[in-house]
Image 1: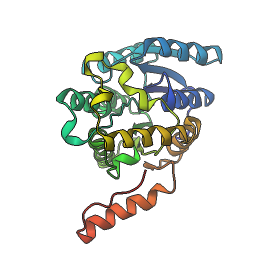
Image 2 (image 1 turned 180 degrees about the horizontal axis):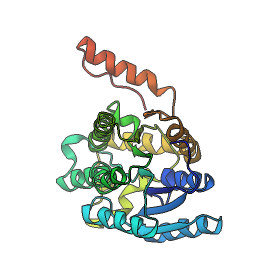
Image 3 (image 1 turned 90 degrees about the vertical axis):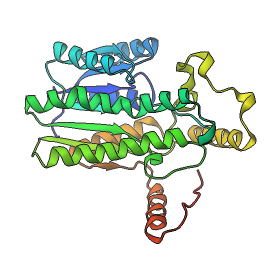
Image 4 (image 1 turned 30 degrees about the vertical axis):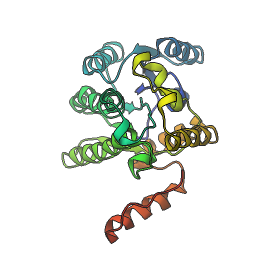
Length: 280
């Protein structure tokens, strides 16, 4: 989808981080914006900033884990702008625990936002986009953890692998029908966002008790925080996303060195080896 000016972009997780950067890039391209996020305060700040910069913006507080709220987001989008040309299913959370220690609530939270959030976005918007018959594009945010499986991030890995195969399936389903809608899956490594603070959005009773985290998990958590702090800027990711939309590229790997990790995983599978434990 090469022509963006005047078209409509819907971005979830748009109040901060990668989503906010993508929204800003879309605004620079002359798109009209619908911003969705569970954080009402930061969402309003982002909406106001983009509006002051000259963009036409609708802000919609949305919990993407809830199908009804994503459907309401679609209804609001079409009521205001009459279309969605670029859908960016970006909202995401992270949790660092060994698989056996993740509670049922942990699994439901991570999969609810990261995987079901994308499922709900596709189900709410793609039928409407198909009915309109206009060129469009869907970007689903996964992670390099959707292509490899780092230790200590089991629920997160599962959710992001799900987003990758969902995106591949969506691409195939649209392609065999000759639909004018492209698909991309975003698989970044470390980016300077607040992903390590994801649990701020959970009820206090469900948050991880740091006093109960074992030594290995604590080291993993510290490594993640350090890697995030040293990561690339969200603006770099946003630039790669808009370039992929314009060129029709499916896989968006923002960190070139991660391709080697993907290759090692593929070789593990083909050679029948146990998974290689790759460094962060």
